[in-house]
Image (cartoon, rainbow, N blue to C red; front, side, top):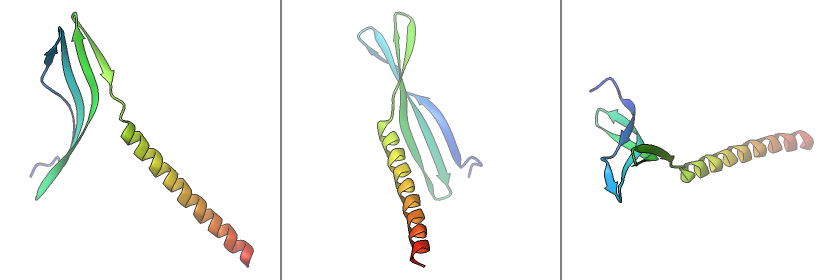
Length: 94
């Protein structure tokens, strides 16, 4: 087995010519390798558009990822508030 059990790569698709423009999709891949298998998690990061000799990079915002982090943050905050509230309530009941 390779020493690199965790890798991160920036990968690009094959160029696609559409209406005088060349489009290349860019994504980030995280690769996990174990002795019995592994897994790949990829997400799109940008679209590269080449027109008239100029290339522009259009970033892709992953709103699902942002929503998941927001939900996790609210869950942690709610858990901490409930713990603090229960400690305060126990202190008043004595």
